[in-house]
Length: 401
Image 1: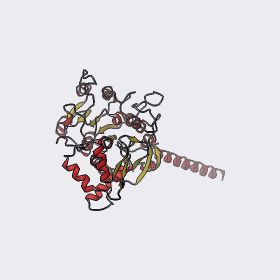
Image 2: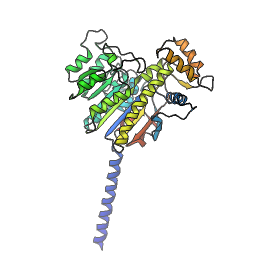
Image 3: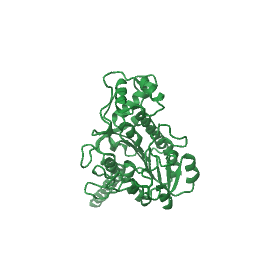
Image 4: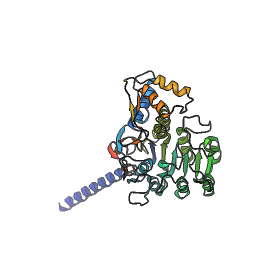
C-alpha cells in the first residue's frame, strides 16, 4: 500500500513540475516574427484627428478607424526621460529600445553613462535577422537608438559609422544627415558602408536590382541621392521613393520568413510635421505609417501563432487638440488649402496657427509634451502591452519576459 501511495506522490509531483515548466516557458515565450512600430510624436489625439479626417472623406462624422485602432490590446506608456519631465526622441528611443531611462540628448547610453544593449542586439544574439527603417534619416534619434551609442544625438556621422559594427541585415530611410560629417571633410557615409559590407541603393528599382544575393543592405530614398534628407513622405518626393508600406515590403522580401526577424519601423515625419503644426502633413504621415502597419498585419494573418506587432510612440508632439473654439472641424477648408499649396508649407508660423484655429484644430506648442502615449498590440504576447506601462517596459515584453 505504501508503494502505491509513493508512486502516486511521485506522479503528482512530476505533473506539478511539468505544469510549472510549461507555464514558465509560455510566460517567457517570444514571437518568431516581431514588428515594432514607433510613430514619432504620435499621441492619441494625432490618431483621433487622422480618424476624423478619414471619417470626413467617407462622408461621416466619425466611425472610420486606422488599422492600429483595431488591434485587440490597448494601453498607454509613460515617457519621461531620466533627467527631464519632457523627453526628447533619443532618450525615449533609448528607453523603448534598451529598457532603461536615458538623459535627453543621449543615444543607447543610460543615466549612469553606460552603453546599454537594445532589443535588436538581444534578438540578433538569438538568431533573429534585424531590420531598422524610418521615414526620416537612418542616423536620426529613434532608429539610432537601436544600433548606436552616443552622448550626443547630433553626432550623426559618428552614429551612422556604427552601422557596420551592428551587423544588422536591413536598413532603410531618408538617407543620412551629415553625410560627410558636419565639416564635409569625411568619407561619404554610403561609401563607408559599402566598404564595410553593405550594399547601398537609392530608390526602389535600384534596390531590387542590387540587393539580390546581398548579405546586408541599406535602402535610401532616391531623392536623398544628392544628400538631401529634408523631405516629408507626402511632400512631392520622387517616384522612386518608397512609402513606409513599400519600405516594409522591401524589408520582408529581403529578410524572408525562414529565420526569425525583428523589424523596427519609425514614422519619423509625423513628428516633423507636428513640430511645424502642419495638420494635413501630419495626417498624411499617420496614414502612411498605418499603411505600413497594414502590411505587417497581413503578414500576421498568415503567421498568427508566430507574430507580434506592437505600435507605440516615443512622445507626443505639438499639444494637439481635436477642436479649437468650434465643435465642427472644417476639413473641406483644411484639405483645400493643402492641395492648393501643392502640399507645401507656404504659411508662416502665425498664419498657420490662425488657419488651424479657423478649422478648429488646436496646436499648443511646436515642441514635445509629456503625456502618456498609446500602445496598440496584436499577436503572440500582445496582452502584456495592455494597461498602463512605462516605455522602458517594452523591451522586456517583446523578449517575452
